[in-house]
Image (cartoon, rainbow, N blue to C red):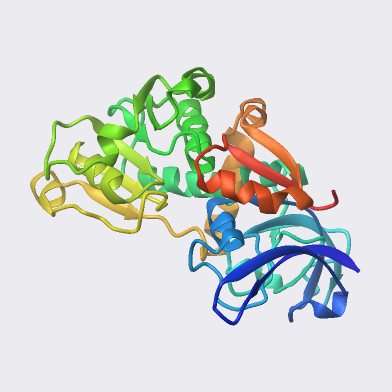
Length: 328
């Protein structure tokens, strides 16, 4: 038997998350069984647990879009018992049981070998949020961004993506401007590498189609008016990586920044990426991320605490990353 958070749907289509005891034969199909050690609580997981977003595709569902652990059984010769692995995305926690459990049965092609230089907990301290931040940076640099071109705006700066994005950009020599709704976190954000802190409100309200230019590039995890205003304030030939929707899925903007200034809007899909790109992203995270700074923005919780923590995460009261020890 093993512990897992299970989200079930009632007849009225409302859902409920409970901490449950399950037998191994309840696991969904797959060719590799992983003994999970660590998972995370992401924004998407919080939506799934609380039922406040249409994340789950089938019920019952074990949420958790990340997991790290050890292979226990494998029908694929590419993976052997004892191999340390992680999974980000691939639909786990949405259409296939995910990482908020002590065991998982998954498809072998979803596995990534543990990056050299990181342990299981550290990979989950990074998690999908940090992995998405790296994918965003990689996309910006593929399109020509380099230090010295100007300020880089990071929205949702106190969240998981924002926190890691600040650290990564600062380590590469970029001047980072952090936008946050929690000005009391100024000192913390500066300790991560932010050079300037902006209040969230001006960006989050309806703005003009074109505004005064400020940013060479943007990593945005917020969406809606924040993304529209970020684009309107981006310099000519600047770059905006859109990777989240904390404010909303809408995009109340015009084509003016893209046509009149040549701004490029880059969509970041972290769920389905080829293995070569995943390996590059994780190798760079292991090499470039300051693990001491990462630790400052990471909080450990037990599996039994994850359900209650989900509401706080959606309310924006959580700093940085929540790492889940599934064995407590």
